[in-house]
Image (tube, rainbow, N blue to C red; front, side, top):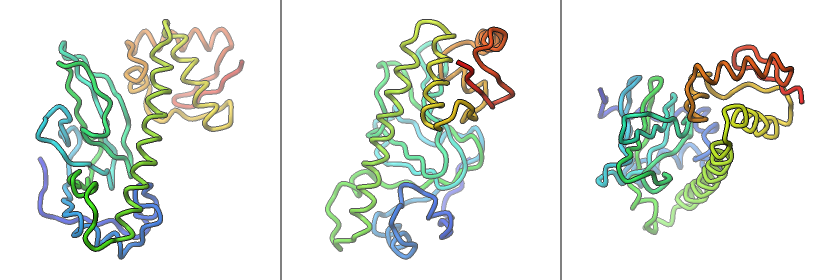
Length: 228
């Protein structure tokens, strides 16, 4: 259940780790909450944070603490994880990729979360006080949107592969390129990995076993090493 009314502002050290507030001082951040008429809410695990399919939803959400996930639910009720959202993660109807007309997109709380909501109109309109932090926030948001677009491109590359094996190897090569190492840690659980590549978990686990047997990878939990 949403807990409203409490303003769980970020601590200075937390603010410094948020990509959305990069180069924004702590005092500017505190003033911005009033300037943007921001609303802060807390959520519990498995609670719905945001329904992107609701045309009345017009705010941008920023995960200030905790973890959430963007999920697509098709008309048959099948859920697919579209994006993991950690500290500094942003979401909103204006930032989401479109799905089919009958699909729904939801942001769901994975761990206890504190989320900051800013009405999209307040971000776009010219600040009456000519606040420097307003321009910085918009710049940071555009940067994050670009990163989202790149992430979506990588996801499309994975999903375009025909077999589970090809999807896994494509994704593993992407992670190796990003980390600059043939050995890397998956950013989420194996169950979420199955959702990410849009396949059955049992079938994926069988393919991972084959890849190990054939000497193409080594794996221990979320730790993966490419051997080819």
